[in-house]
Length: 366
Picture 1 (cartoon, rainbow, N blue to C red):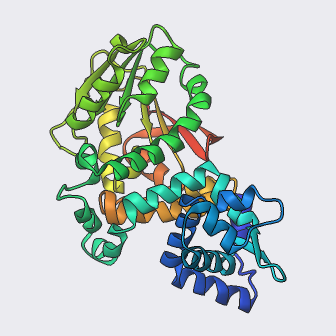
Picture 2: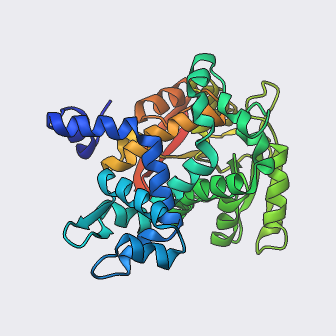
């Protein structure tokens, strides 16, 4: 494994003092408590109140401004203080934000991750041990009895569905502007979007290139949502759908017309390695020598900043407990091994797109 400089510095040597290590261990031990305290400090507007006050606020002032009880505000603030989210003036007992508190309040990515973990993951992660032991998403039972979360997306509770799509779209949407010129640098009249979900990338493609036609390949339930999203939108008439479960041995991709480009965005991380090889092999079957496959993933070993790698490896456990029970966020070596087994060759890699995405450009093995 080849790590970026920031990751190598953090992951190959233990730089914490014994006391710092002990504190981190206790922060982990109380992780669920700290998470909920931070969530309520943000959701109840207490972090925002502190940010807006130059001198900080007392518990009583925050209780009055937020219409919460002094007891509720006090226990949350004391938990936030000792966890590192808040600071206090010891003489006046006025609370203000620490740097971590500022990120919790203002960083959009942190907010998306927090909502995703509360609304989608929190209850289901209780079953992580069962999921890992049995190789299935045992935590998904808190929402329904589907084999994977993808069959049940349209039936999730509104808050869970909203947070799932906000999470999914936030990571991908921020990379689309940089991805479009990479894909359309080659003549592209037919693009196949495998795992296209609600068609956000397809809509961007038909807006970017007025001649391209896009075929979205996904589950029938996803295509139903796609049609609702693309109906009566500019270029929507150039977006079609092909229903297929890519894990079905009998499922085949449409070979006519041959795709100039095949696009997979945040798709392969939803599958185990042997399943990835099977999917890529199906893609290779419909590719010509002039076709290119573009795989956009957040590979955790290629992250420029260490917090991103930490987030991605934790997201792997969402896949374990909730999504499907057998996939993860992959490293470069893990993904390229699957590409090689499918009879494809890596032609180029484009790093640092959006929030840490990489595009792997592949061609058919000659």
